[in-house]
Structures are given as structure tokens and as C-alpha cells.
Length: 328
Ligand code: SF4
Image (cartoon, rainbow, N blue to C red; front, side):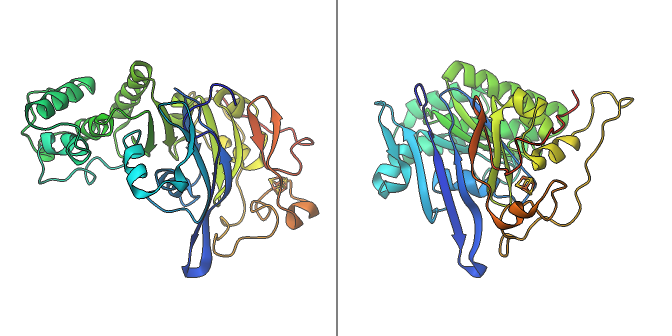
């Protein structure tokens, strides 16, 4: 696709041998240069595994992740040997969920933020300090506090330190894994604004993983919805929230809190349990809980297909259904 950068199309299969669990199964999506792709779904649906597979922090058992390198060529990250992968890791970084446990309490801010630069032999001595000061200022922290330890900072400040560290190697693509979930709502908003400012200034692309629909709606240009390791729908954010085409997306959106508590919207209560990925149902994984399921849903896996501009869905009955969007 013209103009696309970073992960152009990824397809992941991840298996754990114990019980042969497919944590992520046959997932396809792309992320354009400078955009935020939000990934949403219930906990355990494979979002985090997918993010780690892209980074090869977990080795996928199969599939491809195409990434446009700095010379404009598409490279399949899964085929890189460890030396070339190390070079690519400068371009692809991760921001963790928990700013309390993700920073080493025995390291100073200088050590934490500067570590990727030292490991990649990109800076040392005074140059290292200068770069760390610059990174601290970029994330809105006082650059005089390089010798302080993580415990001297609040949760929001710690997450800013984590972001500074992720930016150290000048990456172009960042996986934000529940990056604001552990923070208070007011601090969440500040961190989301910071991530958006940095994206504009540095031309970053984000894969933003969250279970929080409000956060996903706020930050994402496009959204992907996962259910039991499979992607069930991707679309531009406005389109997905206004006109979902998959029954699971509809149910997920109906649980989103309304901005005006006097308004009422029909909440769809799903019956049954989330499918067990070690022993998933036949056909469409969602069929035991789907109010629209028919025989074909129980027998055949729904194909992944385009249903509009930038809108893809895996549902046999999507053309017949009039699904309800989120109340705005
Ligand atoms: Fe529901 Fe069938 Fe669509 Fe699956 S394929 S979401 S069971 S209607």
C-alpha cells in the first residue's frame, strides 16, 4: 500500500507447547507512518502477545512482520539474525504498563534512560549526559534530576522516564502496552497528550494496546479488535465506533460508559464464557456467545475481508446485520 511505513502487514501465529495454545492466530493488519493503531480486546485475548511478537520479545512460531527500514526497503523482521535484529531494535521500542515495576530501583535516571544508548554504543561520557538531559526535557521532566532514583518520582513522572528511555535511540515505531492503565485518570490524560505531542514532533508510529475503549477512542487513528487470539475487525476509529461490523465489537462498545449518565443505551450482555484458546470452538470463535450465530458460524471460520474503505471484518453475516455503534 502506497505511503505505508513500519508494519505493513503482519501475520502472526504463536504457539505454546503446553496444551498447544494458539495465543495469536492468523492476525493481519498494517500501521501507517505517523499513525496510531489502537488494539483493544478483553484481557487474555492476545493483545500483549501480539505486541511482543512484533518486537520479537516473544518468538512467533510463524508469520511475517514487514517493516520499512530507513532506506525505504521493506524488511521481514522475522527473518533477521540477532545482529541485524539488534540494529532494528533501535527503531522499534516498547513502553511498559507499570511505571512502578518497569524501572530498575537501583539505577539512577541517567542509568535508566541512558542504558539503550550505552548498550547500542551510541553515546558515553558527557555526550550521554547531554542526550539524557535532552530526553528528560522532551518528556517534561527536570533535566537536573539525573542522579535521582525512581522512588523519588510519582507514577506519572516514572512513566515519563519510561518514555524518555524508549525515545533514547530515536525510534520510529513504539509499542505502548497498556501504557496509561496503571495511572490516575488525570495523569493518564497528561501522558496521552505527551505521546501525541511526541508523535507530531518526531513522526512516530504507535501500536497502542489497551483494554480501555475511552483511551483507544481518544488516541487512535485506526483500531483493531481482538477476540481469543484472532483479529475480528479493523477500521478507522470514527467508523468503528459509529458503525461496527462485527457482533463482538458491537457488544464491546455497548459496555462503554456514557458521557452523560442521564442518557441510557442498551448494553449487550453476552452469555457464556470467553472461549478457551487451548480448546477453542469450531468455526467462528465467537459463535457460542454471539446472538446472531447460525449453522455456518459453527462450522466455518469466517474469512477476513474488506467491507469498506480501510474497514476489514471476519464475520459470515456482516452484510445482513444492522449493528449498533457506541453512544457518543
Ligand atoms: Fe456471530 Fe457468526 Fe459473525 Fe461469528 S460469524 S460473529 S457467530 S454472526
